[in-house]
Amino acid sequence: MAKSALKFKDSVAAYEKLAQEIAARRFAPVYLLMGEEGYFIDALAERLATTVLDEASRAFNQITVYGRDTDAGQVVNLCRQMPMMGQYQVVIVKEAQQLRGIEKLSYYTQKPSPTTILVVCHKEKNADKRSAFYKGCAANGALFESVRPRDYEIASWLQQFVKGRGLTIDQKALSMLTDHLGTDIAKISNELCKLTVSLPEGTKRITDADIEANIGISKDFNNFELCKAVLTRDMGRALMIADHFARNPKDNPLLLTVMALFGQFRDLFVVNYLRWLARHKGKPFPPDQELMRILRKNNTFVLAEIKQNAAAWDNRKVFGILGLLREYDAKSKGLNAGGAPDGELLRELLLKIFFA
Image 1: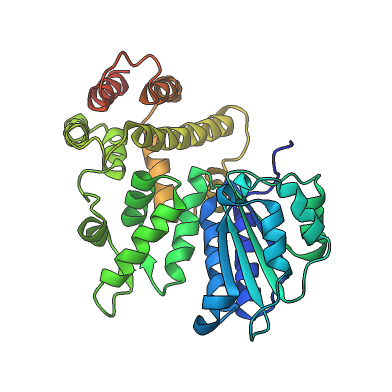
Image 2 (image 1 turned 180 degrees about the horizontal axis):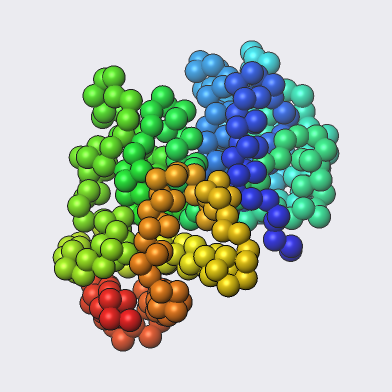
């Protein structure tokens, strides 16, 4: 099956549109929520579960089943039932990718009941878009495709997530979260929700101290600080942070550290290459707004730091370091690591970077 052309930002926009329609009680008879990123699927299913029916009606007009425990025929039978003393009944199928005979749901989606709202949560992958089931959902219901974010897309989403709660977030706090939690937006949102509840009343800005106090990510020993030490060639500081990581391997997985370093050196390489084109090929160096678009950044302070750091690194060395980081990315996944622990591998990697 061809890979979806949708991007993460498209999923975010589609999610917001559907959430608005649900809040306005403009319901579709069928919702097919599908894709690799489970966060939005769960969030939309929860919105429907808490919006369509009031709390009293849910006890007898809302049914949740799991794909591994049922089959398509049983789901169709549930959907054909009439609601008890209400306008709608809601049938939610979770983990629908495990539903036996899912294609037979097409018998229902081609002509859904006006008194049933069927919510199909199809995670891990998309439903077959060539199938009669999918086409029935497209013709008579609402489709939502959830795409996983890439690492460079997390920061802007997180800022909007925080903004939606009436807050802002400092750049260091933002980097601490994204470097530590990666692209797991369900985990990030869960940690942020817990954090916002814990913040003192009247707080408008999330700082690195808030992250350390409430989420448990050290503001002094994290990937943001490690990258800063490496890029400024502060070997002592970098090795001190690496030693902290070695003592706390579960909180500081090598894979995320390598990804953070790779992103930083990739940005240096791009900036230095653009400078080389300007010096040797007469191609104008891009203005800040264009450079932010190229690097996928949305903060002028971050851009200024990248430009400053790039000037201190020769691109031949940067290219070699990117190759090293690819090698240690593989080692972090257990390939050719020789059984060495993460802490030892990180220290080895840092020494190779500093003496490259």
